[in-house]
Image (cartoon, rainbow, N blue to C red):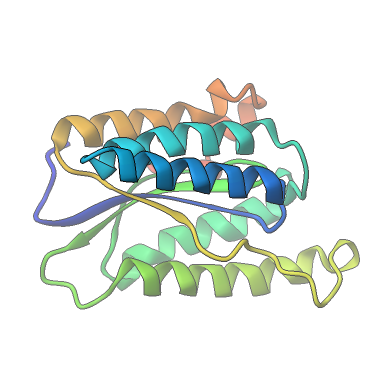
Length: 188
């Protein structure tokens, strides 16, 4: 897939409490050190992401709400709704405690990644909370605040990111259902 004009980004967002706080702080400290020691922040981000995603894939603690197919369908539907707002969604993957999303924002758009993800968090958090009400106290957060954002710089990198997103569930050792719709989409 050629990289079209505009911005393309690889985003990862996760459920609240899906990474131990000490591990999260350690990963962020490593990222800061790597960015200070390197002139290429892009490489430091890649290295951070590999460690960050490995922790999420192991799911050491926290909720795994997207093991529930109804919740995964809510998230998949909201991701696909991003296309109605002007984004292109070349790929996404929903795993038990996090999601990966490749989003393209055309150059002519007035939208922003931040606004889209905040809206996605709000809408899916509200709808999913209704489905998990007995398991989640009303004051508990659904999504972890923030997300990992990695700007895609060229066509070869886009091809690697798309392959990663589509193969992540298999590499994480998840059951076959996480490797197909509604957990992975769309096909190009």
